[in-house]
Length: 582
Image (spheres, rainbow, N blue to C red):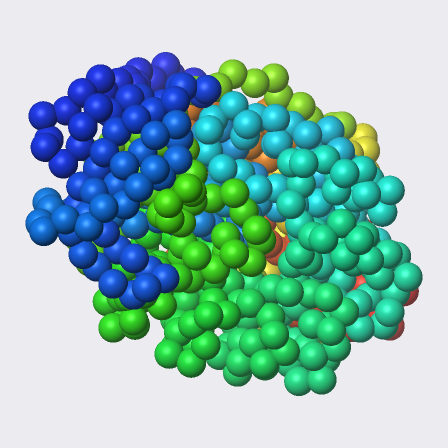
Protein backbone atom coordinates (compact mmCIF):
# COMPACT_ATOMS: atom_id res chain seq x y z
CA UNK A 1 0.00 0.00 0.00
CA UNK A 2 1.21 3.49 -0.84
CA UNK A 3 0.01 6.39 1.29
CA UNK A 4 0.13 9.31 -1.07
CA UNK A 5 1.69 12.34 0.50
CA UNK A 6 3.76 10.43 3.03
CA UNK A 7 6.96 11.98 1.70
CA UNK A 8 7.91 15.48 2.87
CA UNK A 9 7.66 18.41 0.47
CA UNK A 10 9.68 21.62 0.57
CA UNK A 11 8.15 24.92 -0.44
CA UNK A 12 9.10 28.56 -0.09
CA UNK A 13 7.14 31.75 0.34
CA UNK A 14 8.24 34.77 -1.65
CA UNK A 15 8.47 37.86 0.50
CA UNK A 16 8.88 41.07 -1.47
CA UNK A 17 9.99 44.26 0.25
CA UNK A 18 10.42 46.32 -2.86
CA UNK A 19 10.47 46.23 -6.63
CA UNK A 20 12.53 47.53 -9.49
CA UNK A 21 9.44 47.48 -11.70
CA UNK A 22 8.56 51.15 -12.17
CA UNK A 23 4.87 50.27 -12.39
CA UNK A 24 4.71 49.45 -8.70
CA UNK A 25 6.13 51.36 -5.77
CA UNK A 26 6.39 50.24 -2.14
CA UNK A 27 5.00 46.72 -2.15
CA UNK A 28 4.33 45.28 1.29
CA UNK A 29 3.77 41.57 1.73
CA UNK A 30 0.72 39.87 3.12
CA UNK A 31 0.39 39.99 6.86
CA UNK A 32 -2.97 39.97 8.59
CA UNK A 33 -3.61 43.36 10.14
CA UNK A 34 -0.82 45.17 8.29
CA UNK A 35 -1.76 48.37 6.50
CA UNK A 36 -0.38 49.17 3.08
CA UNK A 37 0.41 52.19 0.96
CA UNK A 38 1.52 51.87 -2.63
CA UNK A 39 0.70 52.87 -6.19
CA UNK A 40 0.19 50.68 -9.24
CA UNK A 41 0.18 51.92 -12.84
CA UNK A 42 -1.27 50.22 -15.86
CA UNK A 43 -4.21 50.12 -18.24
CA UNK A 44 -7.22 50.56 -15.99
CA UNK A 45 -10.15 48.34 -17.01
CA UNK A 46 -13.24 50.26 -15.94
CA UNK A 47 -15.83 47.52 -16.25
CA UNK A 48 -18.80 49.58 -15.17
CA UNK A 49 -18.06 52.42 -17.61
CA UNK A 50 -16.84 50.02 -20.32
CA UNK A 51 -13.57 51.84 -20.82
CA UNK A 52 -9.82 51.11 -20.69
CA UNK A 53 -7.31 53.90 -20.13
CA UNK A 54 -3.85 54.55 -18.59
CA UNK A 55 -4.13 55.17 -14.86
CA UNK A 56 -2.50 54.99 -11.48
CA UNK A 57 -4.23 53.25 -8.59
CA UNK A 58 -3.30 54.68 -5.21
CA UNK A 59 -3.75 52.35 -2.23
CA UNK A 60 -3.72 53.50 1.37
CA UNK A 61 -4.87 51.72 4.52
CA UNK A 62 -6.08 48.70 2.56
CA UNK A 63 -8.44 50.73 0.36
CA UNK A 64 -8.43 52.43 -3.03
CA UNK A 65 -7.54 56.02 -2.16
CA UNK A 66 -7.65 57.35 -5.71
CA UNK A 67 -7.61 56.39 -9.39
CA UNK A 68 -5.83 58.94 -11.53
CA UNK A 69 -5.95 59.00 -15.32
CA UNK A 70 -2.47 59.28 -16.90
CA UNK A 71 -1.24 60.17 -20.37
CA UNK A 72 0.53 56.82 -20.51
CA UNK A 73 1.17 53.75 -18.34
CA UNK A 74 2.82 50.32 -18.61
CA UNK A 75 1.22 47.67 -20.80
CA UNK A 76 -0.37 45.74 -17.98
CA UNK A 77 -4.05 45.65 -17.07
CA UNK A 78 -5.67 46.52 -13.74
CA UNK A 79 -9.10 45.14 -12.90
CA UNK A 80 -11.10 43.78 -9.96
CA UNK A 81 -10.35 40.27 -8.73
CA UNK A 82 -12.56 37.34 -9.71
CA UNK A 83 -15.33 35.89 -7.54
CA UNK A 84 -16.49 32.26 -7.75
CA UNK A 85 -20.27 32.63 -7.43
CA UNK A 86 -20.88 29.13 -6.06
CA UNK A 87 -18.37 26.59 -4.78
CA UNK A 88 -18.10 23.81 -2.25
CA UNK A 89 -14.58 24.30 -0.90
CA UNK A 90 -14.64 20.73 0.41
CA UNK A 91 -14.66 19.33 -3.13
CA UNK A 92 -11.17 20.69 -3.67
CA UNK A 93 -10.11 18.14 -1.02
CA UNK A 94 -8.48 21.13 0.73
CA UNK A 95 -9.37 23.04 3.87
CA UNK A 96 -10.27 26.68 3.11
CA UNK A 97 -6.83 28.03 4.01
CA UNK A 98 -5.19 25.72 1.46
CA UNK A 99 -7.86 26.37 -1.17
CA UNK A 100 -7.07 30.07 -0.86
CA UNK A 101 -3.37 29.50 -1.50
CA UNK A 102 -4.19 28.02 -4.91
CA UNK A 103 -7.10 30.28 -5.86
CA UNK A 104 -5.20 33.58 -5.50
CA UNK A 105 -2.64 32.46 -8.09
CA UNK A 106 -5.46 32.66 -10.66
CA UNK A 107 -6.78 36.04 -9.56
CA UNK A 108 -9.66 34.82 -7.41
CA UNK A 109 -10.15 37.07 -4.40
CA UNK A 110 -13.50 35.78 -3.10
CA UNK A 111 -15.84 32.81 -3.14
CA UNK A 112 -19.52 32.34 -2.38
CA UNK A 113 -19.03 29.11 -0.47
CA UNK A 114 -21.63 26.56 0.57
CA UNK A 115 -20.31 24.42 3.50
CA UNK A 116 -23.03 21.89 2.78
CA UNK A 117 -20.62 18.96 2.48
CA UNK A 118 -18.96 19.21 5.88
CA UNK A 119 -22.33 20.10 7.45
CA UNK A 120 -23.68 16.73 6.34
CA UNK A 121 -20.81 15.06 8.16
CA UNK A 122 -20.20 17.24 11.24
CA UNK A 123 -23.15 19.62 11.44
CA UNK A 124 -22.71 23.05 13.03
CA UNK A 125 -19.21 22.14 14.18
CA UNK A 126 -18.23 21.60 10.56
CA UNK A 127 -19.58 24.99 9.43
CA UNK A 128 -17.69 26.75 12.21
CA UNK A 129 -14.52 24.88 11.26
CA UNK A 130 -14.76 26.20 7.69
CA UNK A 131 -15.46 29.78 8.76
CA UNK A 132 -12.67 29.88 11.33
CA UNK A 133 -10.07 28.23 9.10
CA UNK A 134 -10.92 30.62 6.27
CA UNK A 135 -10.57 33.66 8.51
CA UNK A 136 -6.89 32.95 9.04
CA UNK A 137 -5.95 33.56 5.40
CA UNK A 138 -7.03 37.07 4.43
CA UNK A 139 -8.89 35.52 1.50
CA UNK A 140 -12.56 36.54 1.24
CA UNK A 141 -14.69 33.49 1.92
CA UNK A 142 -18.44 34.20 2.10
CA UNK A 143 -20.13 31.16 3.60
CA UNK A 144 -23.85 30.36 3.49
CA UNK A 145 -26.19 28.50 5.80
CA UNK A 146 -26.84 25.03 4.30
CA UNK A 147 -30.54 24.68 3.56
CA UNK A 148 -30.78 20.92 2.98
CA UNK A 149 -28.90 18.91 5.60
CA UNK A 150 -29.72 16.13 5.21
CA UNK A 151 -30.38 16.55 1.51
CA UNK A 152 -33.03 13.82 1.51
CA UNK A 153 -34.52 11.33 3.98
CA UNK A 154 -33.34 8.51 1.72
CA UNK A 155 -29.75 8.32 2.96
CA UNK A 156 -27.85 8.17 6.23
CA UNK A 157 -26.05 11.35 7.09
CA UNK A 158 -23.84 12.44 9.96
CA UNK A 159 -25.80 15.49 11.10
CA UNK A 160 -28.78 17.74 10.43
CA UNK A 161 -29.23 21.51 10.23
CA UNK A 162 -32.58 22.70 11.60
CA UNK A 163 -34.36 26.02 11.07
CA UNK A 164 -33.20 26.97 14.57
CA UNK A 165 -29.63 26.28 13.51
CA UNK A 166 -30.10 28.39 10.39
CA UNK A 167 -31.47 31.28 12.44
CA UNK A 168 -28.48 31.03 14.77
CA UNK A 169 -26.15 31.14 11.75
CA UNK A 170 -27.96 34.16 10.29
CA UNK A 171 -27.48 36.00 13.55
CA UNK A 172 -23.72 35.68 13.08
CA UNK A 173 -21.87 38.07 10.79
CA UNK A 174 -19.97 35.28 9.02
CA UNK A 175 -23.00 33.77 7.22
CA UNK A 176 -24.17 35.66 4.16
CA UNK A 177 -26.96 33.73 2.40
CA UNK A 178 -29.18 30.64 2.45
CA UNK A 179 -27.27 28.05 0.46
CA UNK A 180 -28.70 26.07 -2.43
CA UNK A 181 -32.29 24.98 -1.91
CA UNK A 182 -32.03 21.51 -3.42
CA UNK A 183 -35.46 20.44 -2.27
CA UNK A 184 -37.21 22.04 -5.21
CA UNK A 185 -40.15 19.58 -4.99
CA UNK A 186 -40.64 20.84 -1.42
CA UNK A 187 -40.57 24.44 -2.63
CA UNK A 188 -43.20 23.72 -5.30
CA UNK A 189 -45.36 21.76 -2.86
CA UNK A 190 -45.22 24.49 -0.22
CA UNK A 191 -43.52 22.21 2.32
CA UNK A 192 -43.71 23.94 5.72
CA UNK A 193 -40.12 23.18 6.77
CA UNK A 194 -38.71 24.36 3.46
CA UNK A 195 -40.77 27.54 3.59
CA UNK A 196 -39.65 28.21 7.16
CA UNK A 197 -36.03 28.23 6.02
CA UNK A 198 -36.76 30.55 3.11
CA UNK A 199 -38.75 32.85 5.40
CA UNK A 200 -35.76 33.04 7.77
CA UNK A 201 -33.58 34.18 4.89
CA UNK A 202 -36.10 36.88 4.04
CA UNK A 203 -36.32 37.93 7.69
CA UNK A 204 -32.58 38.46 7.87
CA UNK A 205 -32.25 39.95 4.40
CA UNK A 206 -30.22 37.04 2.99
CA UNK A 207 -30.35 35.91 -0.66
CA UNK A 208 -31.53 32.35 -1.33
CA UNK A 209 -29.55 30.16 -3.71
CA UNK A 210 -31.27 27.67 -5.97
CA UNK A 211 -30.60 24.14 -7.19
CA UNK A 212 -33.23 22.89 -9.63
CA UNK A 213 -31.76 20.95 -12.56
CA UNK A 214 -34.08 20.80 -15.54
CA UNK A 215 -36.82 22.94 -13.99
CA UNK A 216 -38.58 25.08 -16.63
CA UNK A 217 -41.81 26.88 -17.45
CA UNK A 218 -44.44 27.32 -14.76
CA UNK A 219 -42.48 25.26 -12.25
CA UNK A 220 -39.41 27.46 -12.68
CA UNK A 221 -41.59 30.55 -12.22
CA UNK A 222 -43.12 29.11 -9.05
CA UNK A 223 -39.68 28.19 -7.71
CA UNK A 224 -38.38 31.72 -8.31
CA UNK A 225 -41.52 33.30 -6.86
CA UNK A 226 -40.87 31.48 -3.59
CA UNK A 227 -37.78 33.64 -3.18
CA UNK A 228 -35.07 31.65 -4.98
CA UNK A 229 -32.67 34.07 -6.66
CA UNK A 230 -30.02 31.97 -8.43
CA UNK A 231 -29.37 28.62 -10.05
CA UNK A 232 -26.13 26.89 -11.05
CA UNK A 233 -27.67 23.64 -12.30
CA UNK A 234 -28.88 24.66 -15.78
CA UNK A 235 -27.65 22.28 -18.45
CA UNK A 236 -29.49 23.65 -21.50
CA UNK A 237 -29.75 27.19 -22.79
CA UNK A 238 -33.55 26.91 -22.88
CA UNK A 239 -33.58 26.16 -19.17
CA UNK A 240 -31.33 29.14 -18.54
CA UNK A 241 -33.62 31.41 -20.53
CA UNK A 242 -36.67 30.22 -18.59
CA UNK A 243 -35.07 30.92 -15.23
CA UNK A 244 -33.69 34.29 -16.33
CA UNK A 245 -37.20 35.26 -17.47
CA UNK A 246 -38.29 34.58 -13.89
CA UNK A 247 -35.70 37.05 -12.61
CA UNK A 248 -33.09 34.52 -11.47
CA UNK A 249 -29.34 34.90 -11.85
CA UNK A 250 -27.65 31.98 -13.65
CA UNK A 251 -24.20 30.86 -12.53
CA UNK A 252 -22.49 29.23 -15.51
CA UNK A 253 -20.77 26.21 -14.00
CA UNK A 254 -17.53 24.64 -15.11
CA UNK A 255 -16.21 22.26 -12.48
CA UNK A 256 -14.20 19.07 -12.48
CA UNK A 257 -17.21 16.89 -13.31
CA UNK A 258 -20.19 19.07 -14.26
CA UNK A 259 -19.38 21.37 -17.18
CA UNK A 260 -22.11 23.57 -18.61
CA UNK A 261 -20.06 26.44 -20.08
CA UNK A 262 -20.47 25.37 -23.71
CA UNK A 263 -24.23 24.88 -23.33
CA UNK A 264 -24.87 28.21 -21.62
CA UNK A 265 -22.25 30.74 -22.73
CA UNK A 266 -24.41 32.15 -25.56
CA UNK A 267 -26.65 33.58 -22.84
CA UNK A 268 -23.90 36.20 -22.62
CA UNK A 269 -25.23 37.63 -25.90
CA UNK A 270 -28.80 37.78 -24.58
CA UNK A 271 -28.82 38.47 -20.83
CA UNK A 272 -25.29 39.27 -19.62
CA UNK A 273 -26.56 41.15 -16.56
CA UNK A 274 -28.10 37.91 -15.24
CA UNK A 275 -24.93 35.79 -15.46
CA UNK A 276 -22.14 34.79 -13.09
CA UNK A 277 -19.39 32.15 -13.25
CA UNK A 278 -18.87 29.32 -10.78
CA UNK A 279 -16.98 26.07 -10.34
CA UNK A 280 -19.34 24.33 -7.85
CA UNK A 281 -16.97 21.39 -7.34
CA UNK A 282 -13.33 21.57 -8.36
CA UNK A 283 -10.63 19.03 -7.57
CA UNK A 284 -7.14 20.21 -6.59
CA UNK A 285 -5.39 19.27 -9.83
CA UNK A 286 -7.91 21.35 -11.77
CA UNK A 287 -7.65 24.24 -9.31
CA UNK A 288 -3.88 24.17 -9.67
CA UNK A 289 -4.29 24.85 -13.40
CA UNK A 290 -6.86 27.63 -13.24
CA UNK A 291 -10.11 28.92 -11.83
CA UNK A 292 -12.62 31.61 -12.90
CA UNK A 293 -9.91 33.21 -15.05
CA UNK A 294 -10.11 30.23 -17.41
CA UNK A 295 -13.82 30.82 -18.02
CA UNK A 296 -13.18 34.49 -18.69
CA UNK A 297 -10.48 33.61 -21.22
CA UNK A 298 -12.71 31.07 -22.97
CA UNK A 299 -15.63 33.50 -23.18
CA UNK A 300 -13.47 36.29 -24.59
CA UNK A 301 -11.94 33.84 -27.10
CA UNK A 302 -15.51 33.16 -28.29
CA UNK A 303 -15.77 36.91 -28.96
CA UNK A 304 -18.19 37.59 -26.16
CA UNK A 305 -18.15 41.23 -25.09
CA UNK A 306 -15.16 41.76 -22.78
CA UNK A 307 -17.03 44.01 -20.35
CA UNK A 308 -20.04 41.68 -20.18
CA UNK A 309 -17.75 38.76 -19.39
CA UNK A 310 -15.87 40.70 -16.71
CA UNK A 311 -19.15 41.87 -15.22
CA UNK A 312 -20.16 38.23 -14.75
CA UNK A 313 -16.77 37.32 -13.26
CA UNK A 314 -16.19 40.35 -11.05
CA UNK A 315 -19.24 42.54 -10.54
CA UNK A 316 -22.51 40.60 -10.52
CA UNK A 317 -21.72 38.17 -7.68
CA UNK A 318 -20.50 41.01 -5.48
CA UNK A 319 -23.62 43.06 -6.18
CA UNK A 320 -26.06 40.15 -5.90
CA UNK A 321 -24.80 38.88 -2.55
CA UNK A 322 -23.76 42.26 -1.17
CA UNK A 323 -20.17 41.11 -0.63
CA UNK A 324 -17.47 43.22 0.97
CA UNK A 325 -15.26 42.88 -2.10
CA UNK A 326 -13.70 45.82 -3.88
CA UNK A 327 -14.65 46.66 -7.47
CA UNK A 328 -11.79 49.09 -8.09
CA UNK A 329 -13.75 52.17 -7.16
CA UNK A 330 -12.43 54.91 -4.90
CA UNK A 331 -13.07 53.97 -1.26
CA UNK A 332 -13.37 50.22 -2.05
CA UNK A 333 -11.25 47.55 -0.39
CA UNK A 334 -8.11 47.16 -2.51
CA UNK A 335 -9.03 43.81 -4.08
CA UNK A 336 -7.64 43.70 -7.60
CA UNK A 337 -5.40 41.91 -10.05
CA UNK A 338 -2.67 42.87 -12.49
CA UNK A 339 -2.69 41.07 -15.87
CA UNK A 340 -0.17 40.98 -18.68
CA UNK A 341 -2.94 40.79 -21.28
CA UNK A 342 -6.67 40.42 -21.80
CA UNK A 343 -6.29 37.12 -23.65
CA UNK A 344 -5.25 34.38 -21.23
CA UNK A 345 -6.13 36.33 -18.04
CA UNK A 346 -3.23 34.85 -16.11
CA UNK A 347 -2.44 37.30 -13.28
CA UNK A 348 0.95 38.77 -12.58
CA UNK A 349 -0.22 39.85 -9.14
CA UNK A 350 -3.27 39.44 -6.94
CA UNK A 351 -4.11 41.85 -4.11
CA UNK A 352 -6.64 41.41 -1.30
CA UNK A 353 -7.27 44.35 1.04
CA UNK A 354 -4.15 45.93 -0.37
CA UNK A 355 -1.94 42.94 0.43
CA UNK A 356 0.01 41.20 -2.29
CA UNK A 357 -1.19 37.58 -1.97
CA UNK A 358 0.14 36.13 -5.23
CA UNK A 359 3.07 37.18 -7.39
CA UNK A 360 4.05 35.62 -10.72
CA UNK A 361 2.37 32.30 -9.94
CA UNK A 362 3.66 32.08 -6.37
CA UNK A 363 1.16 32.12 -3.52
CA UNK A 364 2.12 34.45 -0.67
CA UNK A 365 -0.60 33.25 1.69
CA UNK A 366 1.19 31.41 4.50
CA UNK A 367 0.16 27.95 5.61
CA UNK A 368 -2.32 27.81 8.50
CA UNK A 369 -2.32 25.01 11.06
CA UNK A 370 -5.61 23.34 12.02
CA UNK A 371 -6.93 20.44 14.06
CA UNK A 372 -8.94 17.96 11.94
CA UNK A 373 -12.50 17.06 12.89
CA UNK A 374 -14.30 13.94 11.69
CA UNK A 375 -17.29 11.60 12.05
CA UNK A 376 -16.41 8.08 10.96
CA UNK A 377 -17.50 4.78 12.53
CA UNK A 378 -17.47 2.19 9.71
CA UNK A 379 -15.65 -1.08 10.40
CA UNK A 380 -13.64 -3.23 7.93
CA UNK A 381 -15.75 -5.16 5.43
CA UNK A 382 -15.87 -8.93 5.07
CA UNK A 383 -15.14 -10.70 1.77
CA UNK A 384 -18.85 -11.24 0.99
CA UNK A 385 -19.88 -7.61 1.63
CA UNK A 386 -20.66 -6.80 -2.01
CA UNK A 387 -22.56 -9.89 -3.11
CA UNK A 388 -25.53 -9.15 -5.39
CA UNK A 389 -27.98 -11.96 -6.01
CA UNK A 390 -29.01 -12.48 -9.61
CA UNK A 391 -32.69 -12.59 -10.52
CA UNK A 392 -34.60 -13.31 -13.69
CA UNK A 393 -34.94 -10.54 -16.22
CA UNK A 394 -33.03 -7.38 -17.05
CA UNK A 395 -31.27 -5.31 -14.40
CA UNK A 396 -31.53 -1.55 -13.93
CA UNK A 397 -28.13 0.03 -14.51
CA UNK A 398 -26.85 3.52 -13.74
CA UNK A 399 -25.58 5.07 -16.99
CA UNK A 400 -22.82 7.60 -16.32
CA UNK A 401 -22.63 10.70 -18.54
CA UNK A 402 -19.16 12.22 -18.69
CA UNK A 403 -18.94 15.83 -17.46
CA UNK A 404 -22.55 15.72 -16.23
CA UNK A 405 -24.17 15.11 -12.85
CA UNK A 406 -27.31 13.66 -14.39
CA UNK A 407 -27.42 9.96 -15.21
CA UNK A 408 -29.65 7.74 -17.33
CA UNK A 409 -31.37 4.45 -16.54
CA UNK A 410 -30.42 1.45 -18.66
CA UNK A 411 -31.91 -2.02 -18.60
CA UNK A 412 -29.93 -5.07 -19.71
CA UNK A 413 -29.27 -8.72 -18.98
CA UNK A 414 -26.19 -9.03 -16.78
CA UNK A 415 -23.45 -11.55 -16.14
CA UNK A 416 -23.97 -14.04 -13.30
CA UNK A 417 -22.13 -16.99 -11.80
CA UNK A 418 -23.54 -19.39 -9.21
CA UNK A 419 -26.49 -17.10 -8.66
CA UNK A 420 -24.37 -13.99 -8.02
CA UNK A 421 -24.06 -10.97 -10.32
CA UNK A 422 -20.55 -10.38 -11.62
CA UNK A 423 -19.01 -7.35 -13.26
CA UNK A 424 -18.96 -7.64 -17.05
CA UNK A 425 -15.83 -5.80 -18.14
CA UNK A 426 -16.46 -6.49 -21.83
CA UNK A 427 -19.75 -4.55 -21.60
CA UNK A 428 -18.41 -1.99 -19.12
CA UNK A 429 -21.01 -3.04 -16.55
CA UNK A 430 -19.40 -2.86 -13.12
CA UNK A 431 -20.57 -3.16 -9.55
CA UNK A 432 -21.07 0.00 -7.50
CA UNK A 433 -21.68 0.01 -3.75
CA UNK A 434 -22.28 2.45 -0.90
CA UNK A 435 -21.26 1.75 2.70
CA UNK A 436 -22.67 3.66 5.67
CA UNK A 437 -19.68 5.42 7.28
CA UNK A 438 -21.56 6.63 10.36
CA UNK A 439 -22.58 3.27 11.83
CA UNK A 440 -20.51 0.16 12.44
CA UNK A 441 -21.24 -2.99 10.43
CA UNK A 442 -24.14 -1.70 8.32
CA UNK A 443 -25.02 -3.77 5.27
CA UNK A 444 -23.70 -2.15 2.06
CA UNK A 445 -26.04 -1.44 -0.85
CA UNK A 446 -24.92 -2.82 -4.20
CA UNK A 447 -26.02 -1.95 -7.75
CA UNK A 448 -24.63 -1.78 -11.29
CA UNK A 449 -23.11 1.06 -13.29
CA UNK A 450 -22.01 1.59 -16.88
CA UNK A 451 -19.58 4.24 -18.09
CA UNK A 452 -16.63 4.12 -15.71
CA UNK A 453 -14.62 2.01 -18.15
CA UNK A 454 -12.40 0.31 -15.57
CA UNK A 455 -10.79 -2.85 -16.87
CA UNK A 456 -9.14 -3.85 -13.61
CA UNK A 457 -9.24 -3.12 -9.90
CA UNK A 458 -11.47 -0.64 -8.09
CA UNK A 459 -11.62 2.97 -6.92
CA UNK A 460 -13.32 4.25 -3.77
CA UNK A 461 -14.04 7.51 -1.98
CA UNK A 462 -15.46 8.88 1.27
CA UNK A 463 -16.45 11.97 -0.72
CA UNK A 464 -19.91 10.93 -1.89
CA UNK A 465 -22.44 13.73 -2.20
CA UNK A 466 -24.35 14.62 -0.19
CA UNK A 467 -24.14 12.44 2.90
CA UNK A 468 -20.56 11.32 2.21
CA UNK A 469 -20.79 7.66 2.90
CA UNK A 470 -18.18 5.40 1.29
CA UNK A 471 -18.74 4.76 -2.41
CA UNK A 472 -16.80 2.22 -4.48
CA UNK A 473 -16.87 0.94 -8.05
CA UNK A 474 -14.84 -1.94 -9.42
CA UNK A 475 -14.26 -4.98 -11.55
CA UNK A 476 -14.15 -7.60 -8.77
CA UNK A 477 -15.58 -7.88 -5.28
CA UNK A 478 -12.08 -8.48 -3.92
CA UNK A 479 -10.70 -5.24 -5.35
CA UNK A 480 -13.77 -3.29 -4.21
CA UNK A 481 -13.46 -4.57 -0.65
CA UNK A 482 -9.76 -3.74 -0.55
CA UNK A 483 -10.40 -0.22 -1.88
CA UNK A 484 -13.21 0.40 0.62
CA UNK A 485 -11.21 -0.98 3.53
CA UNK A 486 -8.34 1.36 2.69
CA UNK A 487 -10.78 4.24 3.13
CA UNK A 488 -12.07 2.78 6.40
CA UNK A 489 -8.58 2.20 7.85
CA UNK A 490 -7.73 5.89 7.31
CA UNK A 491 -11.20 7.16 8.32
CA UNK A 492 -11.60 8.87 4.99
CA UNK A 493 -9.85 9.35 1.70
CA UNK A 494 -9.65 8.38 -1.96
CA UNK A 495 -8.24 5.01 -2.98
CA UNK A 496 -7.30 3.02 -6.06
CA UNK A 497 -6.50 -0.70 -6.11
CA UNK A 498 -4.84 -2.59 -8.95
CA UNK A 499 -3.05 -5.93 -9.15
CA UNK A 500 0.25 -4.08 -8.76
CA UNK A 501 -0.48 -1.42 -6.14
CA UNK A 502 -2.84 0.01 -3.58
CA UNK A 503 -2.97 3.81 -3.31
CA UNK A 504 -4.63 5.99 -0.68
CA UNK A 505 -4.91 9.77 -0.35
CA UNK A 506 -5.98 10.29 3.28
CA UNK A 507 -8.62 12.95 3.98
CA UNK A 508 -8.61 13.29 7.77
CA UNK A 509 -10.80 16.42 7.93
CA UNK A 510 -14.36 15.02 7.93
CA UNK A 511 -13.26 12.38 5.43
CA UNK A 512 -13.52 15.20 2.86
CA UNK A 513 -10.38 17.32 3.05
CA UNK A 514 -6.67 17.28 3.70
CA UNK A 515 -4.98 19.94 5.80
CA UNK A 516 -1.67 19.23 4.09
CA UNK A 517 0.04 21.57 1.64
CA UNK A 518 -2.27 22.37 -1.29
CA UNK A 519 0.39 21.85 -3.93
CA UNK A 520 1.32 18.46 -2.48
CA UNK A 521 -2.33 17.35 -2.32
CA UNK A 522 -2.81 18.41 -5.96
CA UNK A 523 0.18 16.27 -6.93
CA UNK A 524 -1.16 13.29 -4.95
CA UNK A 525 -4.59 13.60 -6.51
CA UNK A 526 -3.02 13.78 -9.97
CA UNK A 527 -1.34 10.43 -9.27
CA UNK A 528 -4.67 8.88 -8.27
CA UNK A 529 -6.47 10.31 -11.28
CA UNK A 530 -3.75 9.00 -13.59
CA UNK A 531 -3.98 5.57 -11.98
CA UNK A 532 -7.77 5.43 -12.49
CA UNK A 533 -7.33 6.34 -16.14
CA UNK A 534 -4.57 3.76 -16.56
CA UNK A 535 -7.08 1.26 -15.17
CA UNK A 536 -9.24 2.02 -18.21
CA UNK A 537 -11.48 4.94 -17.28
CA UNK A 538 -12.06 7.50 -20.04
CA UNK A 539 -13.97 9.87 -17.77
CA UNK A 540 -12.66 13.41 -17.48
CA UNK A 541 -12.64 13.10 -13.68
CA UNK A 542 -13.30 9.52 -12.46
CA UNK A 543 -13.23 10.32 -8.74
CA UNK A 544 -15.41 13.41 -9.03
CA UNK A 545 -17.90 11.46 -11.15
CA UNK A 546 -17.90 8.64 -8.59
CA UNK A 547 -18.68 11.10 -5.80
CA UNK A 548 -21.87 12.20 -7.58
CA UNK A 549 -23.28 8.69 -8.07
CA UNK A 550 -24.78 9.03 -4.59
CA UNK A 551 -26.35 12.47 -5.20
CA UNK A 552 -30.01 11.53 -5.05
CA UNK A 553 -31.38 15.00 -5.83
CA UNK A 554 -29.91 14.87 -9.35
CA UNK A 555 -31.88 12.60 -11.70
CA UNK A 556 -32.20 10.06 -13.10
CA UNK A 557 -30.90 7.11 -11.05
CA UNK A 558 -28.41 7.05 -8.16
CA UNK A 559 -27.50 4.90 -5.14
CA UNK A 560 -27.39 5.64 -1.42
CA UNK A 561 -26.49 3.53 1.62
CA UNK A 562 -30.20 2.62 1.71
CA UNK A 563 -30.57 1.41 -1.88
CA UNK A 564 -30.92 2.18 -5.58
CA UNK A 565 -32.92 5.39 -6.07
CA UNK A 566 -35.05 6.87 -8.83
CA UNK A 567 -34.50 10.64 -8.75
CA UNK A 568 -37.44 11.34 -11.08
CA UNK A 569 -40.07 9.93 -8.73
CA UNK A 570 -38.06 10.19 -5.49
CA UNK A 571 -38.33 6.59 -4.35
CA UNK A 572 -36.23 3.46 -4.04
CA UNK A 573 -36.25 0.89 -6.81
CA UNK A 574 -34.85 -2.61 -7.15
CA UNK A 575 -31.88 -3.55 -9.30
CA UNK A 576 -34.07 -6.20 -10.88
CA UNK A 577 -37.64 -5.66 -12.00
CA UNK A 578 -39.38 -6.20 -8.73
CA UNK A 579 -42.23 -4.05 -7.51
CA UNK A 580 -40.89 -0.63 -6.56
CA UNK A 581 -39.94 -0.24 -2.91
CA UNK A 582 -41.41 2.44 -0.68
